[in-house]
Length: 551
Image 1: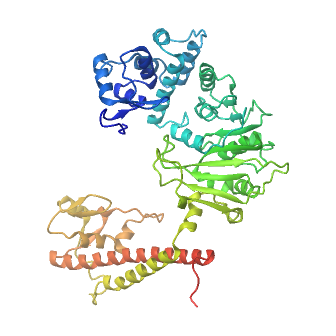
Image 2: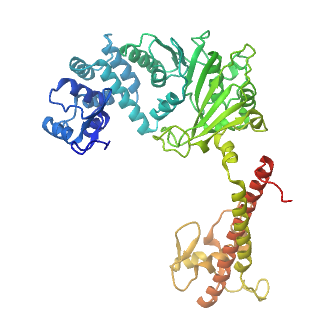
């Protein structure tokens, strides 16, 4: 809740927050404002985003019992869920058609009655927008990638270039049209979209018609295999393509002229969509593509990334905050391309802007800190991997190499000095095999209640048994052989292992030695990692000029 009001009125809330309080859609709150004269007057905010006093809103909800009753909008949504189930997009399209005045014989009577009642008392635009919001919210909570998440839409809008008057915008995989209609909201803008799912395409067009967006044309069809707009050249192409799809039509499209930057592999369907979008861009026009982060470095796409860089087409790569793509946990990037103005298709642009927003919250500011953005020369990108991951290039530019080198070297010195002290003092024993005589299986110890399993290795469950002694002998070569199959596969199975019989004092003496060895091994792993980090920062620092050999 927003709490920026003057002390006299208390905390303020937005229309969306009122909707959450009452369990209704934002469209319902908009209807209440028009239909009820006693609805609280705005206590702050702007004309297009008013704020209301929370106490007044709560009192009004209590009088109207809106907080306790299920609203007609919610009842409609519940009726649609019951009627359409997983086919909710089909239901949205039928409701939108009914609101547009079309005859929908397949619309269930219960749904049709509720739609007619709501249309008589409110705005069709508010109703269809409210249903769209509910559908997007349900898709987000279900982890579905059926629609572009609201956070992704916000990011694309933020980084989209300013469009010229009467611009043309295209989305070749537009879904229900959320991204396309949000980015191309200016007056006089022509919008074109294509979507493989018939119901989604129909709903997107019907919603645009209800919003009185006369310049919108959305059709159904597979944009890669059957491009409905082959001659379209747009000022801006936006796309949130299907991710991880291998059956995108590579075999039948091998000789397609759109693969000007290289034929995408079967596993690189996202780069096929990128080239499709670029083919529909007018000279000087822009492309904004939502891409899985892995596309920036996967080996299969290296040639295409190289051409994007070499020709100066890719202008900016933005690593979006974690959680932006709410349908999955994978990180996503936003690739910003621009078609060169000259006929050769090569630009004189010499850098790529790398922006790393991965430290920002998903709903936070989309402006990067100065140390999270850098202009990387093309020549630095054109190496063996052509890695376009922003973080890979920003680390080397904003690191304090001298301070990191000194700190790592000191930590390595300290860790190395401690290693010798970790080794246990060991004397000459009774000779190999001297402990093989009297042994006990771990299975017998478990049956006697002396062993418990709280993880991958057994632990002592009795004062008669020392855990470090037990686990130390379990790692012995003899027990390792018992856990190795005839095929050479190792699978730890402590129940078949055997340990020497000893009194508890002797067990503790061996356990202390095994414990010290484990600490030594852990110290060695730390030394190994520190050595790797130290060599890496020294090499990178020398190569970039941040460090220099002492005279």
